[in-house]
Length: 360
Image 1 (tube, helix red, strand yellow):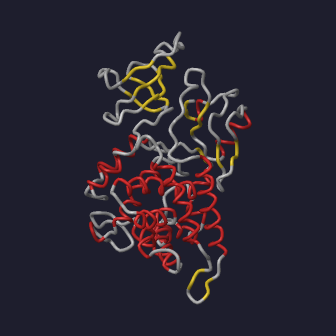
Image 2 (spheres, rainbow, N blue to C red):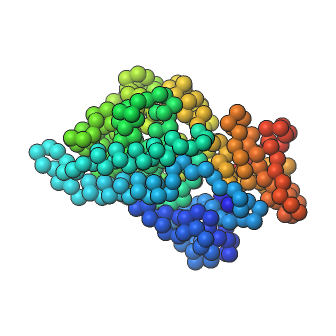
Image 3 (spheres, one colour):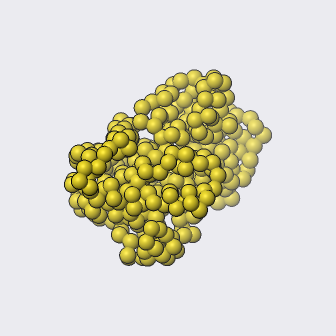
């Protein structure tokens, strides 16, 4: 399979990976042949990239961070939790959301079980979902990324659970933000920005009232927009004043947000997001934590379509953990536009004159 922009999709292309709805269920399954109506519908739903079948890359399977069934269960749990909270009443200062912590602790445990059995430590986030699913898929991605960093930091089981619950629910305060502001196509007014920024304190207020959720987990909601130099919100905390869990969640949040399409902008590539994180080290984030985070991210995920400086189009077929910017690529189109007569690959680690110009 290969991942390509929806602008390059043509009628007759077959999906190699499913497109997901907001509750985690499948909208279009793998193997579906796309026609003009399907393509236009996907565009209208905010889909900008798809995985499609291709004869030159039929054996390529991007390593999943977690199993599809685990992701679907996790997304559905976040979706149901969020839906319930929107309808909840408050009784004696406590939100009526029984066993929220226990449910999501089980969900995060399954995520970690999938992560731990992986052969490699470099993450590919390959899910394709409609725009309305962003908050739910984003929460799961942030939990995956945070959990991997927690493991790398040597956290014990209790610490991982606290971090994981906090990561799954860090944006729960967005349930109090009008949906038109979340999906606004354009800059927010100062009043709108202030309203959106309240999601940190709103989220903390929701989580601190749950009997089965740690106060440290709740601080992920409160502090994930704090920044290392004190320029964040809601309290302008600096450096170690920001809890480590919230620092980890904050980095994972920014990375996944940058690499996801949003109503007001196109998605950034993983390499662009990593460049941003390194540039923000010791300003927005602890530089050592950024280095640890980026060590576990695939700069060019397997199945990504790229343009080389030779004019050739290729698909990433393997990553190299010792040279993350220099993957092995499989040529699918020569510089003159012709298809190769047979499959061949180039290990960019050994071909120093050949460079990736951009992702397609």
